[in-house]
Length: 522
Image 1 (cartoon, rainbow, N blue to C red):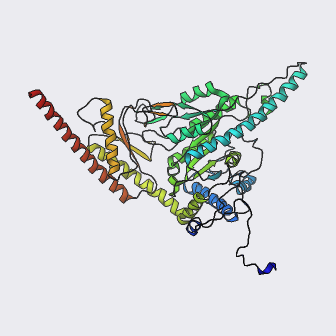
Image 2 (image 1 turned 60 degrees about the vertical axis):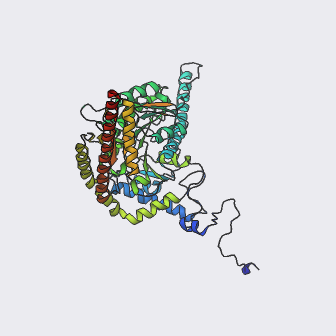
Image 3 (image 1 turned 180 degrees about the vertical axis):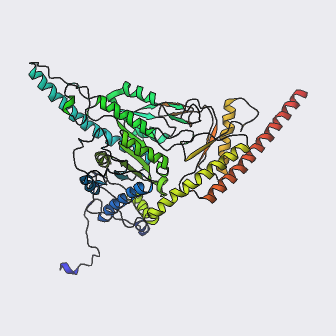
């Protein structure tokens, strides 16, 4: 009798993965969402066996896009056409099924937060996935352009009674141009995607201490590597003295280069120029914790207006105060989001999405705006306190007005009694260790002329993003989530620790001189 069954559940599962969880504690921790999100073909695709997590993913994406538009100030879709407004409701998750053969060389006036997807991995791995997705899309568009060129060549040859039907194949796009920033994850992400990284040098501003984009070096690299370039990566959130890349000028430069060298949707205007390729060079912006900064968000809006931007990568933990493990990918182009979502291998953990969903509901839009406004209020206080502390010990603030998150002070006078650069750097590094043992985290101590080798590439002056930066220095950040009480405690501990360090160094120097005097007398 089928009605006599005592089986307590509605569904019976006979697959290899049925969301079974042994531990009640683990099940409770994950709210029973054991199936995760997405399907093997698309991280944003609905999973029939996981209706709850699929719906939660869509809701979370809508919430976070609303937060970055109305809270952080990033612009969304243009509103000039009613069809585009309807399209936004359909495509916020980038699940558009078209072949990606359009919009390859411009943003159609769309803002950076027009479309988005959520990935359950951190910024570095998200960068690798974005690059892999862009490579697949570039291969598709280049193939279409090459077929168009071949057809045009054949027709022209027939008209001219020429039997040569050869056409040059599109070169492999395996190079990424990376505006140098001394942070390991992005460089490793490029290599993890199976691509070659060309590190572009930076420049020091002539009247400040800022380290920034070298646009001339970028132009030279664009012309040198040409159609082998998949993407240019710029960064908007970085440690002082590095300041955000001039992403608007970079976007305009890339757009101009693509207009000269690449077919725009395979238009007939370029029938006689078979050297042009369809995909163009992409522009990826590492906006890891930049959503909290109004100044850099305005840069992104401008970049999308005047030039080429393909993808913007934002960390969920640094921007929305959730545990590490997720990233928000934004784009003015729905096809870019679609190719990135489809590139994720297998299903994905729902945990980062659940954390973000709960946090956004807890914050609300006003709560999110509130923590952004509180950070903006504290920035001026932080800058003044940091500068005053530096002057107490004969140092000064690094003048980097375009970086409003990370601040720096020189450490040129921290070490006394030696002119040996190596010995100085050892002592400066010890000061950093001392800060950590006194429970001061997040600061960075950067000596001069440090060298670091990452996957075979040698970075001179590592830490400052410049080969020969003239100062040793220390950085600290006034980031979202820091409260005024915590900030004041940080400066009190830093001052105590600094005085303790200076006292120890002075005693060591006195002992050293006494020992030298004893040796001379003997």
